[in-house]
Amino acid sequence: MSVAQLQSRHLILFDLDGTLVDSAADLYRAMNLSLEKLQFPLVTEEQVRAWVGKGAAKLCETVLEHIFGQVNTEQQTQLLDTFVDIYAQELCVNTQVYTGILPFLDYCQSHNMVMACVTNKPEHLAKGILQILKLDHYFKLVIGGDTLPERKPHPLPLLHCMQLCQVSAAETLMIGDSSNDVEAARRAGIDCIVVSYGYNHGENIHDCQPQQVVDSLEELVEEDLVRRKA
Image 1 (cartoon, rainbow, N blue to C red):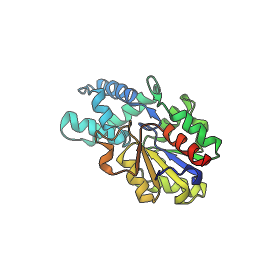
Image 2 (image 1 turned 45 degrees about the vertical axis):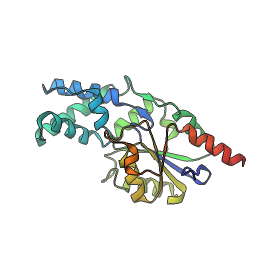
Image 3 (image 1 turned 180 degrees about the horizontal axis):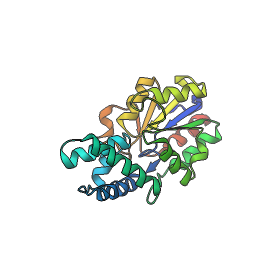
């Protein structure tokens, strides 16, 4: 049985990077510009793709660990501040909306579902990307990694959205691309569908035993249309 059950959902929560948008090329670009500025060795795009998904602070920590074999607090703060500053200046040079996203967002909107973006990216950067890519009007809420005291995989960001929108766990669906999303949804007691194309810290998404994996969110639209006709 499909997990989506869209006709019984009132709130859909979306992860951002690796789920709605492919932003790895810009993250890679900003990271190497930051490393260059600090006169640190550079990294590859492939490495960055495997490291993104847990927020900017975690990305910087992983990069430093890779370069130096350890993380120095001063270097960590220095790299994070430089990276966020450089990245914020040009958020969408190569960042693109994944295929299948717009039809799904339009479908949810036309069926009066409330949508929220729940990401570990700093809130102002997430809002900037959604605005530039003209996706911001779909989302009632944008919760970043720095919006609340906890971030995914803690369930608080998900529970916070449910509380603000006054919906139950049964009426909520999480859509993400990583074990972080799966764990957060499990802990919040809500269903979760993951996409196969995203970033999962270099691990196979099936390893975290998600309820359902789809190659495109358009599959969920087709499935729901069939169900509504039945």
